[in-house]
Image 1 (tube, one colour):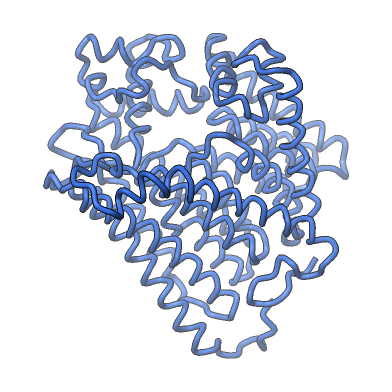
Image 2 (image 1 turned 120 degrees about the vertical axis):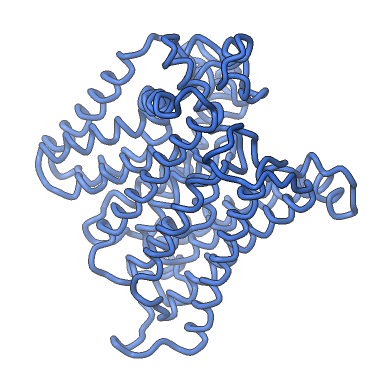
Length: 496
């Protein structure tokens, strides 16, 4: 709501800012592609093979890789903020630029080696274990490594003795990728990345449908998801399985817009499928339930669909699938807000009952405050606000802040009105990405800058900045009901 007359040309500053934002986004994506194209390094794991994923195997220095990573993440976050600000001031990119840029970026990053994480190698190992007829929830990657399997020999050390903690749908996708990969790590990783890239593009299409005919809203969803360098880095280039869960979640949001019990059943089944990829996606069910609140039949079918999908998925696996998941949740830390739940089930670290109740109570309080204080979602998307609130509640209070978890946030944020929350969550995502920046620990020649990163930034500056962002989000939520427009960005007040 910029106050600009319909059809009027955007201010020159907005046009310049929009162009600058696109340049920065392009720079970030180019830096990501360069990191992967250079081949195995501090940021790119070796997957073997001479074919795809393609790389130059140039053996770049750790320092070069680290600086390219910093360039990609900081330029990406800055470009995203600048482009969103220009959008609020009336800038509109030429039609077709964002979709074409998205398809190009996804196609390039999908066929390059993974970067930023070794998780996709773990997926490949678990898929190989399942393909060979063993249970990845029981058999650890160490077995595959010890028998000198061509996939198992690349099993990352950190997870070599850990069975799978992913949902059954993730395991099915990993098994299919292993079959398609022909028994090699390179082939399996390529299949996983291509599958994730297709899921990412389907998610972009679903968001475009959810945005409706409003051009500003459609541009917004493509900036915050489709051409968001932070998501391209983690979901497409990194190949994280979170991208698969997003497809099912957005499908559920599309389904719940239709009235009736059948729509509720389909939406619930899709939500259950998302949670059967990664459990935290179930938190978005609060939004689906809120959107279905006017019909008990729809609400009941929503719950039945979600329950049936989860039961059916986990019934295909042994009890270890659920046990591993709960064990991972319970092993985070004594400050885990969900510890009271895992302890009640006899899992986890068995913290004191009072400590667990206080942590869970704090998390639930944050969820209520956010659900009450966030601005209303767009017409016809009642689910967006409570879904974002409860997913934020989990991420803000979780003791583990992996940046790829933000794949749960950005699609929901993209459906919300523009405002100050955009800048806070983009900043948070950049910070968490920099905290987990690969390569920093392998710098051979210490400098004052790298010493500051290791001794000050990681243990002190980044966590304090992240805590400050949490405080700002809560403060805005509390003020949101008493001060109209408090969530507004520079483009004007957000209508409540």
